[in-house]
Image (cartoon, rainbow, N blue to C red; front, side, top):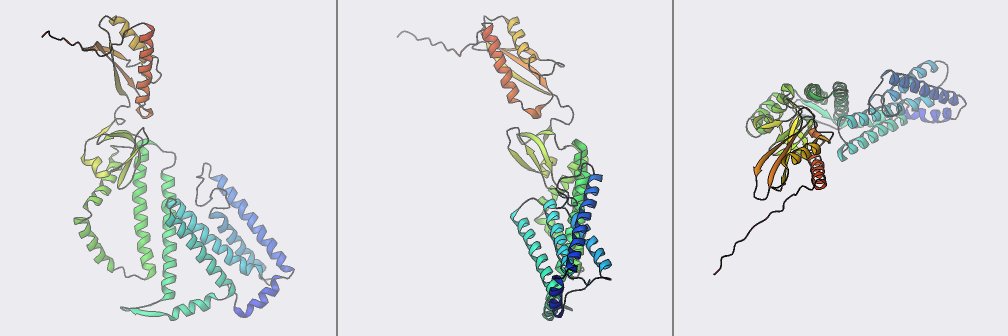
Length: 421
């Protein structure tokens, strides 16, 4: 791929206003339309694709595939037209398309691999500025001159001779390797976690975390090698990390190991209702270091995975999803016990969430100081939908039925005897 030299800049500007330039622009537009059609056909072939796909994007044109196809078609057209026409527009179109592809690839991969944070937005802007700056230097013919000047700024580190040019080229190579690694890991995670729930989701999450960690480790090694770092130095670093884990990082290492044990054993799965350290909720995430439990009130608890391994955990969803609940009612001593029993059963049975098999049951539990104490017990199958709301509905129904049948709900009473002096 030839570059525009400074001596050719005037010739290129003159050629840009010629009639044949319109032919080049028309060919570039045709390449764009053809690239859009091919990307659209490929997207339709992947039925049910992710809307945030790196390859296709949300609107086809914002994915990586569209600029890649456009660049490939434009490069092929340049090779074909170069034999019959002196080209001007293609000399700037190819660098622009390459910059667009680099920006789109870096931005989409960072968005897929990480959540929206100020650091990610800063990296996205940095990639854009660097890509467009390289394009301008390339088109103007200054890129070779700048690179030669940067190559002159060098110094010796040990037995290696480093220069600013080598550092820049190594950093760009390392960044490209890490971006490709993140792309592969994000695509693998999206493929593994698509359309799965429950225990299968937890197991696939374990494989996804392990694969992502392995790919990132390999990508980091390749990136360090591309920069020119001696890999033999990693043996010393590995020894230092081992000592650090043995002393200061043992809790962190224990949490990571516990996370993989939980996912592998499937003793707790995403979607299970659990109670840990008097906190009750549903497991929404199982990460390598911690697990997120969301209560029915909306609060979230971040629990270290080591606690889930070493502490007592109640899993209400592992064996049987049915949960037993109860409410207590006091009535006057002169009340009809059979009538009260029927009314309590009626109040529970008319609730859709209360199971009929096993059905609700009423028991006279205590002869209280103020009245007879009845306990109404019932079973539900969906504790994740809340328990207090159902108990409130049953209590309201009990209150209404007792009032309609004139059953007394006694107030607390105390009798005070005063002795005469």
